[in-house]
Length: 159
Figure 1 (cartoon, rainbow, N blue to C red):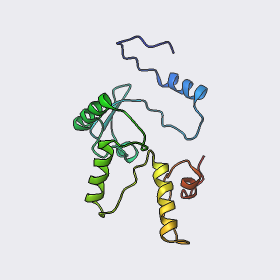
Figure 2: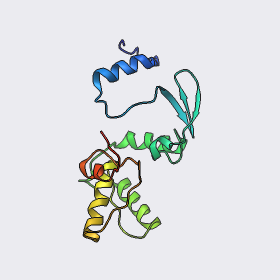
Figure 3: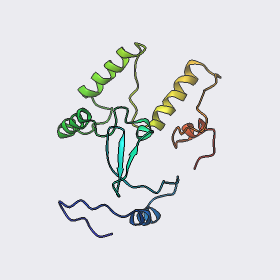
Figure 4: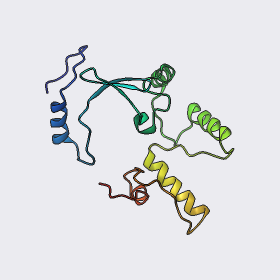
């Protein structure tokens, strides 16, 4: 695959992408032979123009759909000011989000995680602290992350 031309959108062929994957990606799971190039709401389009319904909501991280205008604008606005400063420092958006989450749920406190695996690890730790020796309920055939703790909550064999 050649270097991209500035200003020109080039969609690599599925075979080109598979070659890049074979050369550079550790094979941790099998991909479906589709290349999605855009999305809107609950719909996705592949490189051939075929339209699909996204019943997975981007593996459950797109609760308002693909490219929701308010989300796109909020991301664009925030990225123009500050992209990430770690949780070692104060940022107004993170603390305001924490307050909104805490107030709209069980009126407790929140833990903002960087990934699903980190959130799973925190949930396991909190559960063990609150109920030593207690059991943890997991979803059969669900994916909980690739860390050791998250893998221990994944009943099926995982790579």
